[in-house]
Length: 221
Image (cartoon, one colour):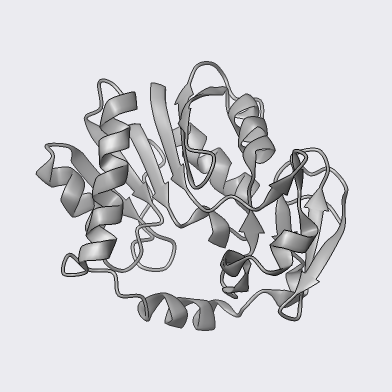
């Protein structure tokens, strides 16, 4: 089976919760095989069950913590796109309070897309794990980032052992149990993404957050 990201050959990785997962040995993307994808109507219904609002203090704190990291590592930011903002663009509201011009995009809830728009920063929080076609999504993202702009991604990294995805730990990992979570990333995956998007990593916490800066022409397109 072809890797959803780099298009190399993948191989069976493990099974868990009745789903089969494949692993790409080139970019180390782990992904669910297509027969286990939810219908889009059911997927959207599950997203609507999330308690994403400014009244959810834990949710707001998560974003504020990430905004603080962004402010420490990103310079000359004015325009921001929240890629995969969900039905309630809380992050956009918080960014605007900080003085940024923020826009939300979501394939289900805010599907309008302006190809010509350029952003100093694209932030994607808890969206990368839902991508059915991560290569296509990344091509779109890269094209929408201004020269010397940034991409900040929050998604849980899968368990690693000896620099390789750990199948045994993956089986008990809570993050893969969500049926809407279908693609998973590790340090090698984000290194591949940075290289092929013409970016360099300026920050990662080796857990769930990475910031990359655009440096040259992308190779992925």
